[in-house]
Image (tube, rainbow, N blue to C red; front, top):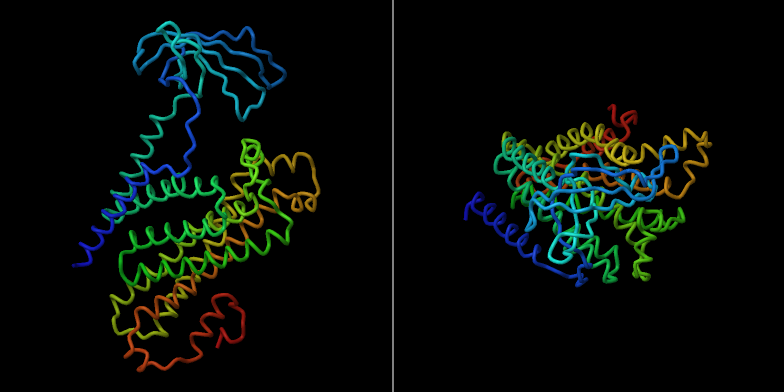
Length: 398
């Protein structure tokens, strides 16, 4: 079977697995009682009962909504929007806007309507479609496999990993198993069932295992627990008192950086694969040195990837600290800030180490016995590794 047919067969298998995951129900949790859902347009708004205190709004906002789809399309009903005073949870509606409405049937007509937020589902589908089209336009068949991998990862997390956690499975082993599965599918789907894919997978897993070990070690040393994460305490109060929140927090650390680790490993493996295609006669040491040079350049930009990704999602928190004039020692020593520091630094360890590991593995996979015999190992490779991390080291300048 040719490589192209093998990759198409692999993609077809992953597609079938995605369909199977869509029907999987490991959690076994019955769906909470709910009414009918429909898209509706607000025709009138009554704010007479809303209480405003500076920028905080409380009490009830009464809406009249015309249903735009569903079995009761065209009918109107009254909808109550309860405002709790929490701006991150509340939505204050205006006339003419479309919202998602949940309602019951009262004497065969829509009633007891509740607003479930501005209607965003259709726009989300449009955005997903544009993303998939862009992948296909830019990357062709590889983009199709990348889109398939995207769907696979989402289904594995929602249908497999999260239910396993709710059922009480150990978060760290479960997280490693899930990451291994996702890494295998992503690297082999995008990189192919070849030496490039193998080098990417092995290099990624080594970086992820290092990240996991460091997260386990330093989470305990920092005295962190999983309750520092949003909604963790609410989850306990929902009846899951025996969940290992600290284990879930540690698993989230290495899962969060796994995508960037695979990205960097793929960069190195793809570069070394292309180099071997253009120069089949290249020796093992020179091949690995070339991969290390590429890794050095990529790490220069990837080192700040996690810092920007995590810190940008907490801009308001840092603005609050600055507005309050808190000392930097107090800020950095806070448990939730320390959790993000752990996320950034431990994840960065995985990023930095995955480059030389992937380069070495790819060099071994692409080298034959003949090339190893012809080119004796020397100190050049050692000096290249030193120059990658310590450019001012005396041996790296020789």
